[in-house]
Length: 84
Image 1 (cartoon, rainbow, N blue to C red):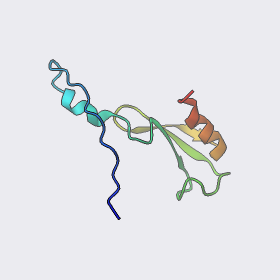
Image 2: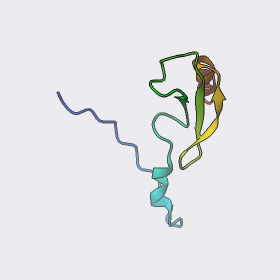
Image 3: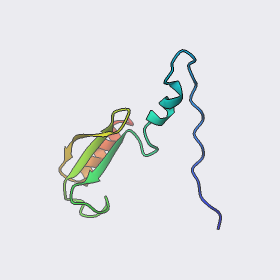
Image 4: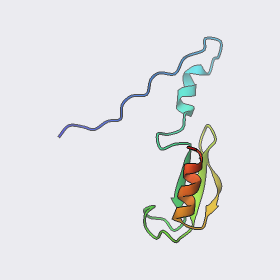
């Protein structure tokens, strides 16, 4: 089988007056989005749906804690808020 790869991102426009412009592309949020949820108990996200979840938001450089959710349903609701 062939190797699977993500399609490359289009290059970001470079501002000639900004010396840090070439590095701005690295500061884009990962492909999974600007928000993510992580289980506090460890393991896969779909396991133990009634356990609390950590909510994390992208701040332009890294994911920062944004709160907690009591269960997987509430965490997914928070995750989908950014899209509406």
